[in-house]
Image 1 (cartoon, rainbow, N blue to C red):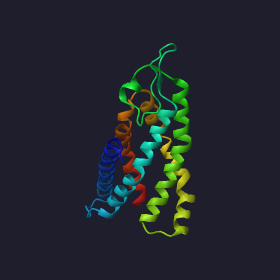
Image 2 (cartoon, helix red, strand yellow):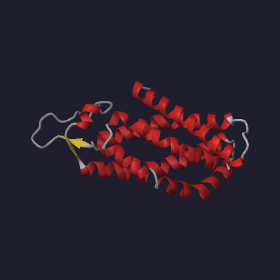
Image 3 (cartoon, helix red, strand yellow):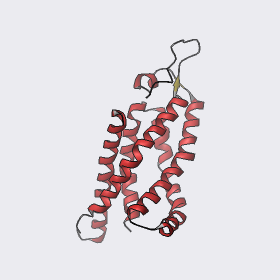
Image 4 (cartoon, one colour):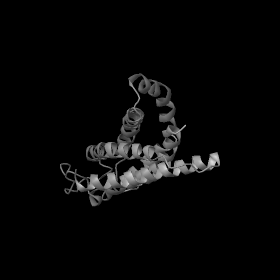
Length: 192
């Protein structure tokens, strides 16, 4: 794993662990009693994040390399080298916003990435909760669409802002910060 993926994974893991702690604090407040912290729940979110952040980083990297957010004006011979392993901050912020590429990335991320991540979350959490195939399938049937549509209330805006405003090297961090609140929601939905 290269250093950018490692950094993104560590940041996301810390923020996801915090979201689990916050969610447990919210539950304790609602109950009016402070119970012990459920470390197994936090550990499940940590493991989930460690497993899913690297492929999600690579997915975003693939989208950026395939559909650069910015392109050089016509006639400029110094186009970004698409064979580089990771888009650099300077390459992404130089040039003009390419609306077609940004739209393609947005629709691929929200139309393919979001459903895959939702399915992965439900299945991995089911496995880490030691559920069998039938239990996981039941969770997918009952939770997939509500969770996906709940995510569509948050993630399209975060995605669009990330694609248009945030340089590539900082997108994972911005997504992780937004994910702090989303992680609280997911933690609460897993703790019912």
